[in-house]
Length: 267
Image (tube, rainbow, N blue to C red; front, side):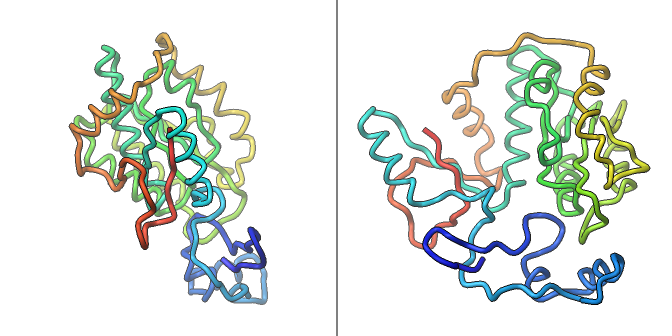
């Protein structure tokens, strides 16, 4: 990013298929993309960056930490920090946590619901005992993360449902429908898109109104909404799976020198 003033930054690009280096310096993929859409440029002309930070949607503002520490101390609360470097790094942990939780409630845990950016259904995932796996975007790097998760899933999922965000262009690093179909083919029983017009993707803007009703139509079983997951349950899960994920959950103290800015703080 380029710091323009106090609390004012210019952000070039966003999390997706292109790397920060490609936004700043270009690449063959960038040149092909610009050529494909009729531009006479072969790279973007970005301002010179002055600071490396998580993009606006994902980062934690360190200035909030002191206020949180004072609030926790005043009320006798525990303050804990959840750290990760990429948004997708939290997805395997959350999916496995849901699967673990469903099993302990005596529910089936054999259906994966892969959600994409804002195309997501947290309520209906709980009502239908679907294991949510959140994809940051509809790009190849996210498809690779999903593939690795399916490699490690024990046991494999019987059903895999996939909802895809459509952003309108064949952009740098976007995953093809064929690539996403290969994820669905890994289901032991049934793999299916939810609300996706595979002929229109990634210009499938009707997906934003179709996926909700189609998901409810596909999944007929209903389960009561659970009580909120407790911190004791979360701690038990983390203890059983210590070291498995690229996520750290730790007591929040003073900031460590050189610690990643990409963190969430929860009370």
